[in-house]
Image 1 (cartoon, rainbow, N blue to C red):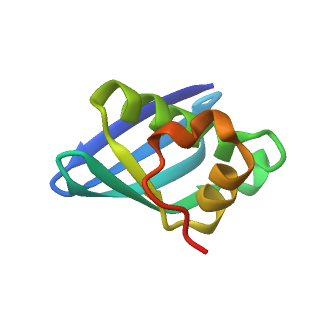
Image 2: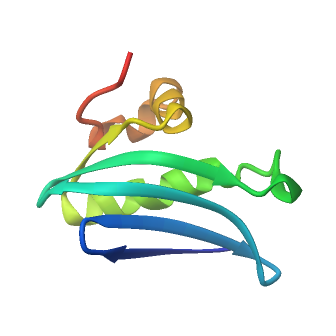
Length: 97
């Protein structure tokens, strides 16, 4: 599995591919120099149940740590993952209720 992160203008995404197929995508908006908002997660049905969403989130969390960025998880999946996983909450700015 390969996951890349790309940014353009005020948007960014993490793209997961496996065997040259798109496995999933997590998108975010850049809200400032030190803040992003994760707004959507999508996993291809062929890859459901393989923790693709979690791997995408952890890749973005790693990027946030490197750049000293905080995250607001507007996406329901990302929000639930932040609630369940204390090991990534250091980059969390706010959990959505």
